[in-house]
Image (cartoon, rainbow, N blue to C red):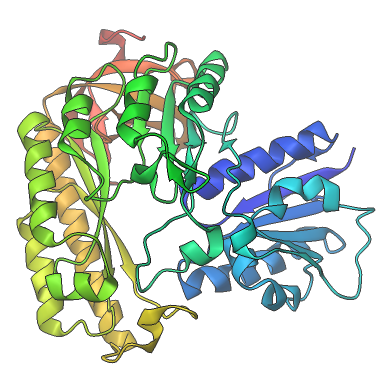
Amino acid sequence: MKKVAFYTLGCKLNFSETSTIGRLFTDAGYGVVGFTEKADVYVINTCSVTDHADKKCRKVVKEALKHSPNAYVTIVGCYAQLKPQEIAEIEGVDMVLGAAEKFRIIDFIDDLTKKPKAVVHQQSIEKVNSQFIAAYSIADRTRTFLKVQDGCDYPCTYCTIPLARGASRSDTIENVVNRARMIAESGVKEIVLTGVNLGDFGIRNGEREDKFFDLVQALDQVDGIERFRISSIEPNLLSNEIIEFVARSKRFVPHFHIPLQSGSDKILGLMRRRYRRDLYVERVAKIREVMPDCCIGVDVIVGFPGETREDFLDTYNFLNNLEISYLHVFTYSEREDTLAAEMPGVVRGAERNERSKMLHILSDKKRRAFYESQLGKAAEVLFESDVKDGYMHGFSKNYVKVRAKYDPLLVNELKAVSLQAISADGDVEVAELSAYAVH
């Protein structure tokens, strides 16, 4: 039996697609092994949000060939769509597949003979725009990442994703519900909804047929799935009706990840974001009104062209005063074929790094404050299979990371616990589990 190994860079959407590609190999008779094991084929699913992600791709190729020098290396993902010829020049790469071709990887894999130059199969993104290809992760995580939307129609000045993934397009509500039911039958208890611009769900063949709220309402009726989690949603697409529905939902959990990118209206304008910070304040206030214990995560970019020290401090103070739970901080990096790459006011690398460090510290403070606000409260935790130093971890509905002494019977189980203290690692410890019921 031939063996295949995978490595995924980037977002939850990429994880769902890697898992789907893995099932294609399994159906074709391959055995799936860990990345550090000897394999006949290595598939690297790439990201291209930052230049750092591109460099990571090169490093992963080298690591793969250390484990198996004669292996056949295939690169897929956003970087592969944007820079196929550049990747083809990387030593050790045998094949590069574009956005649509990656799901036909078995058709392109031949006798695994390494050739002098990498083979490239990639079509223009315009030819991909009408195709929605479903994907989901399963059997490799306690929770499943379910792709329901792809592509983006938002031309933010710093972003290459529309070039790499094309226009916004979605699955049908019926298909998503049926897939969720199938996932439930496998024993998975939590589904994370993923997409490039998730809140824009409902476009097919260039026409809007549904709304994200319609999908949320339909999924809330799916038996067998205990939790649905919304991975990320733009503030202008997170309506009050969605927030109010989640607050009273049977299955959607109180956790929102809402990209901000900057707390400066000036910078938001340069980024061509579709909101200003007043709207963001309104969204956070509404969530806190109906779900006081809700976890709210924020994406923010530092060092964008034209961001002065004063603009950054405006963002810092805005976030410091906002009742949020954690930050995902991205240091701006120039991307070819974006408007931002040509903008004046370039921020020095050292200054970008310093601003990133300040926001990472702020994120740690916000997360700890959020965790402290949950101490003494009851929570329901879904425990996962990872074990470190004799402890296992899980997450509450509102995304508090909890640790408990390892017990194999707890894996993929929901357990009612009392949140007691914060460990030295920053996780929340619980009272004796024997006092609580397993669901």
